Length: 337
Image 1 (cartoon, rainbow, N blue to C red):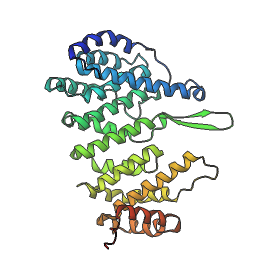
Image 2 (cartoon, rainbow, N blue to C red; image 1 turned 180 degrees about the vertical axis):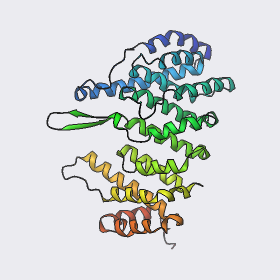
Image 3 (cartoon, rainbow, N blue to C red; image 1 turned 90 degrees about the horizontal axis):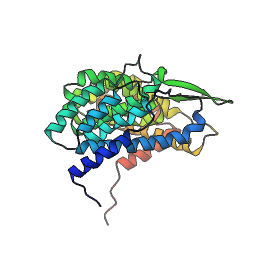
Image 4 (tube, helix red, strand yellow; image 1 turned 30 degrees about the horizontal axis):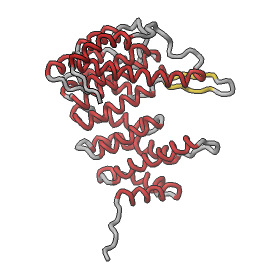
């Protein structure tokens, strides 16, 4: 393993930075009408962008002046979002560094810059989705490593993040595949990042949460895309086990309705293996939420929850799954000889 002194990293960084910043800087639309042919290419680009972001973040650890150069570029909307996104994502890796008070002061200024990258639901554009996602991921790194930096800005930042947790039709489009239409959701990765960020807030600075708003969004997330659904399920379990658990009561009806919908869903006959596995995991996640609710008396005694248990969970299709979950949660000790 090669260990380099900071001075050497800075020296080589000056040569490496222009290479990392090289790329297509022109504005391009998020959709070019040829999505099917470009899926593998886009996946490769995503991996390259992540690697670029991590390299830039590591350079910023050694030389904080790199942060200034990145900021000049990623705030320039004349450059493409695909070019700017890894520069914003580099902040995530910079936030993970431990450079002392002076470095933290510079990062606190960048939090304000990230705020400018979070548009409102009426102004967000699909082409900007990669930049918005990267900004939310960077803020999540702030919350996980330096939550104090978000405290003074949370009243402005978090309402925007709450909006990003919702589905937005401006970010959804239909792609004509000839025999069928494919619905593309450019906001999915943004929602996943936003749910993860607020989960970090609940874990590290729960007093910053608007609990009624957050719980309502968790309830909505239960019927979202499976990738969002699992984050919403985990969020509900965590809040049920937190000092803010009573916050679920105002939207208990919506939570019960969403759980009933998920637990009552049937996999289609011609489903592929991946769809079946996703369906099974969705059922397991929903039942974990049910179990957490059952352990909380203010919820378990509510008529709507009792109805969920009697009408959905205790039915032949679901009861066996729930009993298996209970066995795993409460393993019995073997008899002593």
